[in-house]
Length: 238
Image 1 (cartoon, rainbow, N blue to C red):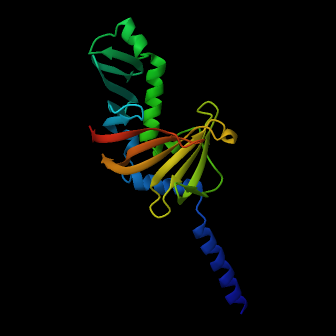
Image 2: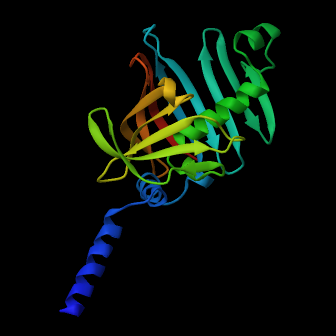
Image 3: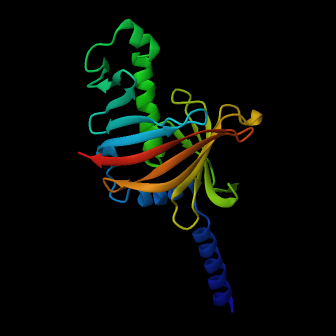
């Protein structure tokens, strides 16, 4: 009888441990879903994006070149009088208008600065590199996996903050309970004020074996105001 009770106790503990998933393990499962071959860190990707905004019927089209092999980045944007290119190449910022150095007027109109080129690189590599980017230095995963409702469905959820030098926002990432696919996320500048935005992910585009969300729909947290949709039209790798 004693041996039977001991077996039952250990079996109960084993099941409990199996059912309780920790944030680091959930993140690994999600990365395995999105990047099963582990190629993100060495990828060289060209993504064609369209952006829908509620105040216009025109879709902006951008081309995003993310080269993780050497940390290079280019953002090409079609404008009424040609093409704007900005980015970081070999540690130096670049800005061009129709292949030439931009005029002061174009620089001012499109805010062609090195600071914004750095900002766009960080922005696009972060969003299109999720969930893999949650393993970057300075990322602080919450102590436990939460169960939270998002858009009428309950997800495994990780609360994420960052070291001060990296960022000050608080993020929540929502993962499908069955597949661990990332289904959406939200962030706050000040969580007590319910500020910030939430993003709903829809569909997938497979680029170089990486499952990247097809659509990202953006809304304000405080009143659900629709802000726009980013659409991944196509992607290829080099």
